[in-house]
Image (cartoon, rainbow, N blue to C red; front, side, top):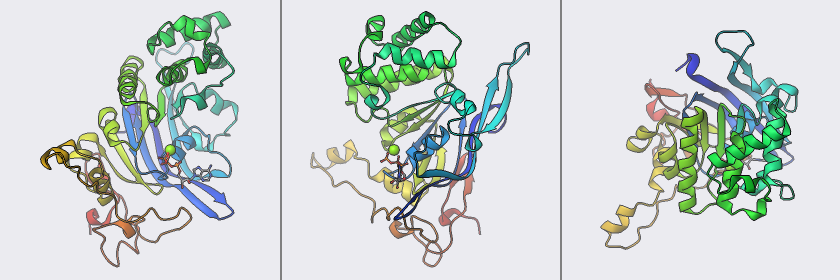
Length: 348
Ligand SMILES: Nc1ncnc2c1ncn2[C@@H]1O[C@H](COP(=O)(O)OP(=O)(O)OP(=O)(O)O)[C@@H](O)[C@H]1O
Ligand SMILES: [Mg+2]
């Protein structure tokens, strides 16, 4: 797993928000690896720290949030003039100045992000073209006219009809799906090594969603980029991801390949999440009567509390008394590439 194939390695990342009411441990000891050209899916209920993990990577955590510890190692390729092959060096993004030169040269260029709501990524009073060309001229030594050519080409690649005309359109002149295509074009115009997609299709209807997912997979192949795909939708994960990290309260509780996640999930939280997806077959076998959806027992504890032991224990149907409520489980590798943070699987 190591060596050249690793693009980003997050180690024991902790990002906290210090609020007057208390400290929110939004990301609390996360370990994740993104491999070059591959897709890592990140799933979990609302508030489990998916977006804050992504924002930490881009050093865009809003105040009063702060990276408290850990490493975000980015294995970047450096094309050196005169060198016969590209070199790889490693840089810890967690240590960089969020608005320093180095981070600005990485953000939007080698690592870019697409958010859920396309309108928030586009400035309403400026044309789509001017916003994309600005990103291009910021990172590439090209003229305004060349940047416009690159932008038009990118808009064509994301299948925006009449891409040249779209350059002069304002965001409100495009439909939701078209705006998200324009945002993807903006994220990809510098050919990033990593695209972080944070619920990019949640605001779209299912047909448009399917088209955007197809498009992202196609562009991933073409550009050879890695994708970190964040969603609470397990159906989308099944389509997009190769490896999947399941998060609960700021921690990764299970990490495995997508097939194993659906065929033999181990963590009680993962199992509960999977049971909460509606199954068409359930309705059919019950003669069309809608089954009750299973929800996960209990409530997510309030974000300021610090629970002893495993943070899922109050909701866990399989908790071991006097163990799960006292001792934090370690991460057990139950098979190559499959790890679980749960006492049920820890070796004695
Ligand atoms: N700007 C902020 N100020 C204070 N707390 C925050 C802030 N942003 C996030 N948090 C807290 O950090 C925790 C993790 O939030 P995050 O946005 O990462 O969740 P998420 O998994 O992306 O959820 P969702 O699926 O709803 O997008 C939550 O408890 C949230 O309330
Ligand atoms: Mg989020």
